[in-house]
Amino acid sequence: MKILIKTALASAVISILTACGGSTEESSPTAELTFAVSDNPANVQAVVIAFKSVAIKKVNDDGDAEEGEAEQTIRVQDNNAENTDYRQVDLIKFQGSNAQELFRDITLEPGDYQMCIYITDGIGNNENTDSYVIEKDGSRKGLSTNSNGSCAGFKPDDELATGRLKTTTFTIHEGKNYIVAEFDLMKVLKEPAGNSHDGNWTLKPTGYELVHVDNVGSISGNVSEQVKANCEGAVGGSEFAYSVYLYPTTLLTNMGDFRIEHPNIGYLSPIASARVNEVETVWSYEFGFVEAGSYSIGYTCTAQLDDPELSDPSPIYLAGPDVEVIAGETVTADIEIEL
Image (cartoon, rainbow, N blue to C red):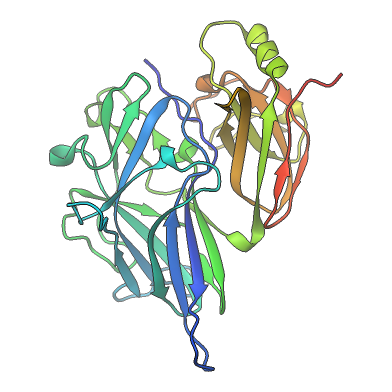
């Protein structure tokens, strides 16, 4: 059975704040890191990641990490559980703009940084217990990344069981900084391929973007029953996955599918996708942590056919209204049939 991931921004929110105190002297920036998702995969029940530690290292003018040890290495622990070696987070439980806090108040100097996020892989002795995916049919499979070793001036104790995820370079300004690390599962979470990892799922080691929350807003809306029914009737079949795709401003005829590079001139790959969920008889979606700017949205009822590693036809059935995202605000964009 083929299982695909359809998600909006499965995101790690990193809020980096300036400490408050009674002194009039300038205080160093401190960091509050919170991991979250803005939507969930369409065809799996759970995506659990065992976050173990985070290494943060200043970079030089060339964008490379400076030599020496990390400025900060933060151990992620779950103080409410017996196991304090990591903290398990089920991304499915944190949708939209919700966030799961991991740790806070990390003192850093302003500047450019590299970050590496270390997880406990769900393979070998840890298979299906530490990091794992529960598929649509209830099957539980291990989740791991194929990258390990030193990063950002830090070397884990158990390299074989510890995977690393690398983010883009980010800047901490003097004063308050709010940064979002986006886990776009459509791009970074891979289903089992053949006998690889004995059928386990894989997180790609790169592709985790960082944006300042000061520059982001959100998009939410409803999808009408008529749009849903019309799409199902047009494509036929019995299996559907309802999603809304987010694009730079464009037309329906230019809305392409997910892939690393689009071979067709004029077609655009989506920035992200959001699952359409039924909440109290209303079908709705939400994109959290979207950078301020202009966007177009498209609706599909066959997102399960969009494989980001293959050349697929565009799944988009109907274009929704264009939207203008303003930092700190939520814009409403309903998708319905024009009368």
